Length: 54
Image (tube, rainbow, N blue to C red; front, side):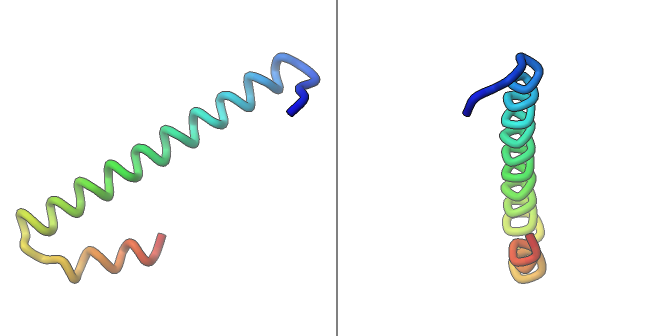
């Protein structure tokens, strides 16, 4: 990829880092919710359908 300006390069890196952070946070959230519903509440059917909505 060829950048015309430094601002374009910075924008590309910011977008990439933001995407990585968002995916990591969503993965962490799903992991915590899975553990909560399965281990604490003992319910798996109610929460697992949420994975199909994403």
